[in-house]
Structures are given as C-alpha cells and as structure tokens.
Image 1 (tube, rainbow, N blue to C red):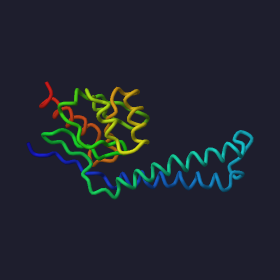
Image 2: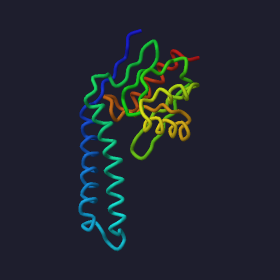
Image 3: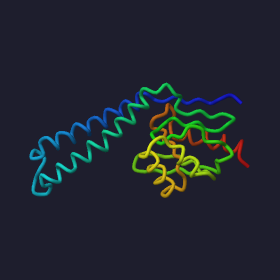
Image 4: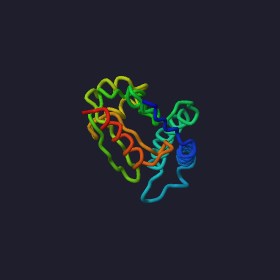
Length: 175
C-alpha cells in the first residue's frame, strides 16, 4: 500500500502560536500591573494569580506549539504498519493496527477530536515524551476511553475528511 501523508498546516499552527503568545503577554501584564485589572469583583491577588497561571499554561502551550512549527515531520502518516501521528503535544508516533480497536469522535467546544481506541492504552501512555503529555494522556484515557487523540486543527485536512479516511483504513485492516 502507498503511504497516505497529511502534512501539518503551518498557517493554523502559527495562528495558535500567536494566540498563545498573546495570552502570555496579557498574563505577564497582569503580573506586572495587577492593579490595572483589579476591581471589586477581581481583587489584585486574584488578578496576580490568574496572570501567573496564564503565563505558565500558555507559555507551555507556546513551547509545545513552537516545537511543532519547527518540526520537519509529516503531521499524520497512514501506512501498512499503522497510523503515525505527529500532529500534537501528546503524539506518540506509530499506533499499530493490531492495537487499534476503533475510533470515537468528540466535540469539545469548537474543537473536534478523533479518539483512537486501543487495546494497549498503557503501552502508548508509557511512550509519551514528558510528564506533562503523560498526564494529559492519562486524563484522555480516563475521560475518552483512550490516551490517543488526533485533532485536525494542526493538519492540512478538515475534520470530516480525516474521520472518513481513518474509518476507511480501519475497515480495511481490522475485522
């Protein structure tokens, strides 16, 4: 079989990176000048805490997104071995066909997610690269029933096409 390669959408990823950077700047502003945002409803210490949390969270997002922007890897590859996912911070590389049991689709806010169901969730959680992505994968496993999720936001394909493509490939290989 020929490989199906879906590249990363650098435009979408750069827009996400700019958004994360904007939140880091606003958070830093809240740390430096909390009284500018303070009110009766939001006291200075709450503004300061929100600024710190915002800088930490969106700073990490910015770092993870930056790694994807400068990566030379293809976003998603489907071949005879399985699905090779390099599209997000919790990507684990090769997801073998023998471990895939199906997929589920979820919508969280405006983000649509394809969850790859697997018979070996711990194998993929252990493969994660760092403690933050490992915790995210454990949360995904608890919430969605699998640690593996693919979001089309960072890929040059829309969600419906990606879902259809993965379902077709699973139907061809898993019975």
